Length: 449
Image 1: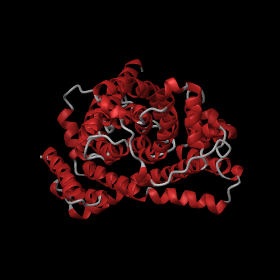
Image 2: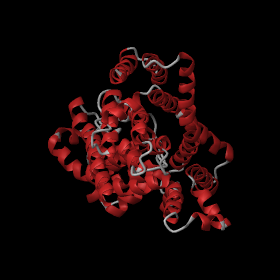
Image 3: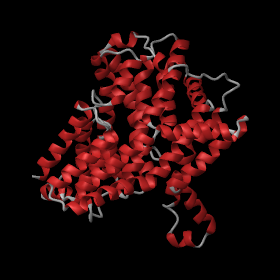
Image 4: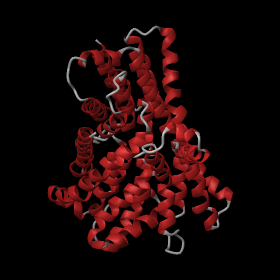
């Protein structure tokens, strides 16, 4: 019965968002209440569960999201992202543009939401394509691969940070394993897969695309852009801070940390929230004051970024509410009991559930958070489960098979002038390859540990 209730809940969510065009956040809350009632939860406990799930998810994540979007906006508005892309192109050369683009997207994508990174990088990609006299589609799959892998595997990107919080995983370890898994994944699913896509739908790689819907896009002269070194450090600073703490944890005991104010300060700065705050303040200087900008101008930039994520934060909170209902209603525990006698690798299980929900719901974020609600009861009390790998498996599963119920599918289709079939054979195929490769590499890492 709980499985049937979950299935009906997912179907209702699809009906509300696709057929009736109801806001995703409102739909999530309605479905959460419906699933709770159908599962037999006492009425007086339902709203408490929803509020607890909503607040518990956003309580920590909201700070990281806020600082992260400010950092990304400051980097973009100062021309730092364009500098990274053009420098990578110079290093790799025009013959290896795909490698330059995938590396640039991977670096820039760490500090930006997927959709924001997409809007930011597409004009740069079109400019590079015009200079090289090739179709923008030549660079499309590599760019999307770099952005998607950062979205799935690398804190402080919002996706893996949200999931790590839900599972209680160490963000630093998620970052470490995410680098190990993410780098080979974006290399194979970007430049390498791009060659296959060119053979699969050759007509797509002759199209000029159209980004007029983006309006006037700002391009920077060489003198207007900050240097590559400062742009790179600004984008990567939160990763550097968190990675430093993760490495130190292998050598520093809790006693050593307690006895040293220096080490205590380093660990404080390496906390994901503090790292994002420090990086945002650093960006205010490197991308703002150092370039002659005034505080009111910088605050307008930050404010525009915050306004752009309000809807996404509500959706994430709604996903957290749905997750909590799945836990409190006993649906997660029921599935845990159902598979308790089976020898299913929890990494595969988390990936499979996230994949199914992603294909059905379209939203990677909602799929990932809902997966946590079903998986947490299965792994609770099991000290052998690596929560960092479970986090990454959920992220990998939630990236699979982006198709017609995903807004990104239609954005890519329209910007690059593709048919539905061509979009399925490029973007959808690439997102599926990222997901499967991510799972394969995670299982390899799990075997080594």
